[in-house]
Length: 466
Ligand SMILES: Cc1cc2nc3c(=O)[nH]c(=O)nc-3n(C[C@H](O)[C@H](O)[C@H](O)COP(=O)(O)OP(=O)(O)OC[C@H]3O[C@@H](n4cnc5c(N)ncnc54)[C@H](O)[C@@H]3O)c2cc1C
Image (tube, rainbow, N blue to C red; front, side):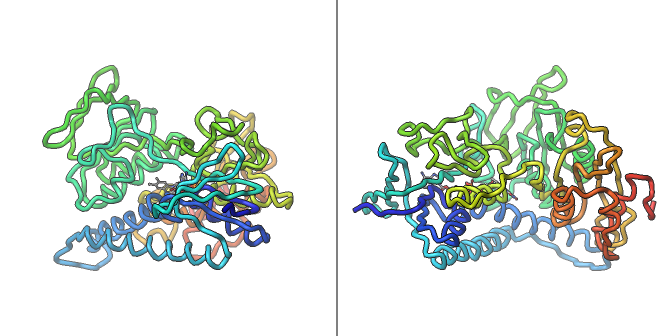
């Protein structure tokens, strides 16, 4: 028997399940097909579990540093099984929350693998072995997400070579690790493992870590990671064919014209994520890839107007909040709600290393490339009372502003809790605010947000505490 729906969503990750909730709110009859667990990568192998481990690492490092706060603990011991158990507890609680939201929205959830058929129905191969179900939808949303990319020769082997998927499940910590890739995921792991007391080496192909961030941010994060004891090698091309396994792993990288050897207990590959476009019946549709991600218009319609695609599978900024916003826009579009398209320059980008990194809008380099005459306001956390109280005064806030109009073009932060501070700058960008609008916004004292107000004043050299 076929079941009819207004929309069938293939993939119940952050993009898919949020799209389903919005569909239900708009009175659409919706179904989600999930072959793994509702919540997808973000909840089970990404944002949440990694942040739970990062938090434990931060507490561990701070406890060791407790003396500085007058808190003296004679014996500090890391119980990594408890660290993992805490991570599981948090994930499980949020997983139950998503399951509850599906029930509340009267959304049908199918546990199985979905694929589009020749007739543009969706076939579900049920996980419980009870065969197949055919769903007949007016619209389809592909929200199948992504998986870790590896380099040929650096495939996961279950013992020495890992991606973030395996690293999140480690039962014990190694003494040392090589991280291939100094992007967001690589730097989060570097920071976390270093805080857990592990010797970390990051090998990055580009000439700086976090290469898509503002240059000043990359430089400061590199300095702070080195201060933690992380060894960072940039401009280095890993040579997979030199990988050797034995006691641990060893590998060479081409660096400054020489083959430089590196060795450690384990190796983590974090070189990006590939879209899950296989096995979902795309060949039976006119859906196009560009070049590996699904191609869509601004409202996430593919070449087939009734087939939408959202989230990591379409590339761009592969972030949970982007996937969910895209899901909402896609559903509102199919429901004739005339939604506004997403402006990618307004998407906050966060790295949860310690200290954190957060940015929104254009970097200084991007603004110049776009032809803007720019000026900057920069303010260090060293002069912010709350940062000193926290004992975390490394980093700064940098605002990139258009000369003449004083319009905020971008905000870039490295420092304590900046991932919770970036939204103010995001709202300022959305509202076309000027540096003076931000400076006139009253920032309570003592808070870390005072650094934003001071950076806004610094644009015209009027900062108070410098
Ligand atoms: C280590 C790590 C840390 C991260 N940290 C952050 C962070 O802090 N903040 C942030 O914003 N982003 C973070 N991300 C990225 C974030 O997880 C993704 O951007 C987000 O999960 C994308 O959502 P999605 O719905 O597109 O895909 P996914 O969450 O990957 O969901 C896709 C779902 O589709 C299912 N599926 C696939 N094929 C089929 C099929 N044929 N039938 C049925 N189901 C199928 C999968 O099982 C999966 O559950 C992190 C990622 C990683 C790996």
